[in-house]
Image 1 (cartoon, rainbow, N blue to C red):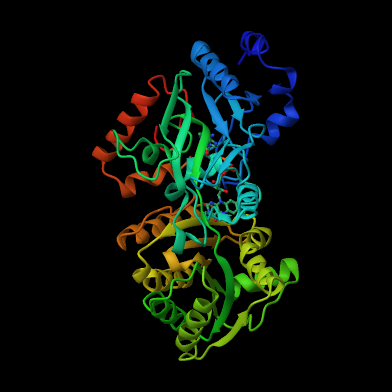
Image 2 (cartoon, helix red, strand yellow):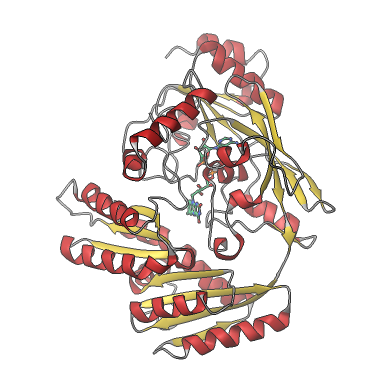
Amino acid sequence: MDFTLIIHHLRKRLSDSQVVISDLEREAYSHDRSPYFGPVSLDFIILFPHSESDVEFILKTSDFFNIPIVVRGAGTGTTGGALPVTACLMMSFEKMDRILEIDVENRVAVIEPGVITGNLQREVSEIGLFYPPDPASLETCTIGGNVAENAGGPRCLKYGVTRDYILGLSGFYVDGTPFHFGGKLRKDVAGYDMIGLLVGSEGTLAVITQIIVKLIALPLEGPLIHCAFTSYDEAFFALNSILTSGVSPSAVEFMDTACLKAIKTCHGIDIQDSDHPAHLLIELDSHDAEQFKKDTEIILDILNRSQSSVQVMSSASEKEILWKTRRLISRSLKQLFPQKISHDIVVPVSRVSTYMAFISQLSIESGIQIIGYGHLGDGNIHVNILIPPDCEDAHIGEILTLQILEQAILLKGSITGEHGIGVTKKPFLNLMFSEYDITIFRGIKRTFDPKNLLNPHKIID
Ligand SMILES: Cc1cc2nc3c(=O)[nH]c(=O)nc-3n(C[C@H](O)[C@H](O)[C@H](O)COP(=O)(O)OP(=O)(O)OC[C@H]3O[C@@H](n4cnc5c(N)ncnc54)[C@H](O)[C@@H]3O)c2cc1C
């Protein structure tokens, strides 16, 4: 595509460093963290707005020249939401990364979309406040990307996901017209729930330029309990007993021995009893130190009823080793199985053990190792198909994917609990929704974006 006229127009207002067309940069911005093997376009210009008026100008330019526009946060998305799949303008929010205000009285922060999630958490924690959503990518991903994907993490179990913390959104519709929804308000039921619609819309409906997030009081960090079980069944029985015991852990994570072996091979980290088949990490927090003692006792009582080995970690360094281990799973599996395909299905917590049994059986029948780990406390299982490098069956990944997603739906679950649809999950949308539902989705998209310029070919065509 010939960008000459568009670049000429953009440079009337933006500086050279805000309009980037080098091949090196284009290559870097042409992928994210998704296992997407379809075609991407290298035919795009990368734009770095510094202000809302830059964003407005860029959107008006896209509208005037009828050229698609793709918005990008940090590119950590795992379903290809920020990929350029056609010739386009790519607007990166990296330079709009200011925390504009921390309003203690109203317990909110007003931020730009490019703020890194971990930076917001650290900044507010210094004054005793807490922003709980904790995707494992929090040291690199942006709040704008979290809003667009409705990101969640281990603490979802107790605190919910990104949507539960968004009180206000400002930004622009695709033609550059501004909008403001919500505010520093704990309650607001005027009109349709536009914040609910925009959170999780994967950059396909509107561009978000300012976010008001709800903050809560920072709890005290409690112990992290590591429990190694002699069987999966014991682990799931303990999981259900804990979740129905009245104790409210901030996270319950599951790993199996295959995950731990991969971490040992790739990073040399080995945790106690790593040869046991199933492991739970149970994190506690509270505003009352006495509560920890009571909750820990209840959990230990449950765990000690099984053939498990239990460790209670209280020091920050001990806890960090276990959390690091948990966070390294995905990277280690990828290093050992570069062709791995991962899914983030979710099922009702009561069906977790049924789903895990299904994966084990599928693994045996297919001869391909399939493992599930992750946020089992909220039913969100990261299912990884570990395709070996010498696998000769080019379609095995697709065949197993279909079975893995169908089984989640059969158990009244969902094909994605965290990572969204983007391009990689688009072919499976009709497993979950009727043709009528998808027609309604298309109608919503057309209303927001009649010319189909904003992040086209994502979620739906
Ligand atoms: C190692 C690793 C661990 C991860 N762990 C988790 C996890 O625990 N939980 C989880 O939920 N996800 C996880 N993810 C996925 C990913 O980090 C999240 O989806 C994250 O929210 C993406 O943020 P980003 O800034 O990288 O967005 P990008 O990948 O750049 O973009 C994602 C989508 O958001 C849209 N978008 C970005 N900014 C805006 C904006 N301002 N306005 C409108 N649309 C916008 C883009 O168009 C795109 O569709 C993980 C990823 C990795 C690589």
